[in-house]
Image (cartoon, rainbow, N blue to C red; front, top):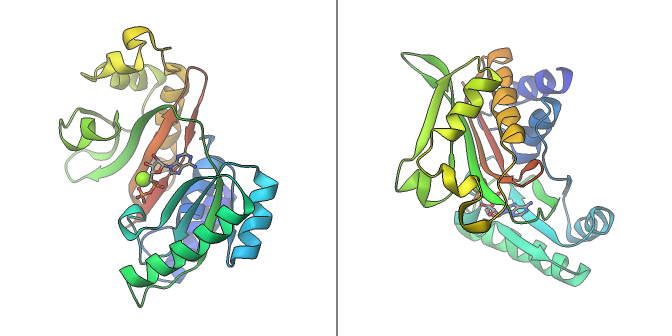
Length: 231
Ligand code: ADP
Ligand code: MG
């Protein structure tokens, strides 16, 4: 996993603990986790050119080592449908970031494909002081934050372990065709969990990982936000 090692070493060299979204997504992609198409722009013109290449609708987000929670900083704009909208959003995000943290170091903005809406799930990993490298799974939004409806397993995970983690959630019916909606692709979600398990075991420098959200679809899944924190 050459790209992964390169990215981790570069961050270490720069004394950065939090990997940037494009870095975290490149690592995910190398481990077989489907992420949305993306590129990084340093000015509005470049952002428009990349958007045209990726295809509308587009999502723009701030890329800064000093801004971890991008939405809190006004650093995320979704569903941009034209070049003019991308250009305007690029400027707004820059202004918002500067207002949020005047001395933030800004790398640019990530220009990405807007993924179709799916059921938003969260895949995480933490180093538990007692049990070691642990993988977490839950449903997005209130299910994790308010209801604490999450499941944990110590890595390495088998495919069976991963499926059990998903099925064990109280909110599992929401993934399994509740009220006539199409069931999510459990096999694809289990693969994401297994790939995360492999990633964290291969790279003990990873202290925390947060794929929040991963869009779960009837066929396949797509990670639209990734955060990795190093030891
Ligand atoms: P934050 O750093 O605030 O967690 P996110 O990257 O998760 O920022 O973006 C906030 C929300 O915007 C996500 O929870 C998701 O609902 C939506 N979103 C982000 N990126 C995409 C994308 N590429 N396609 C579709 N929706 C997205
Ligand atoms: Mg997020």
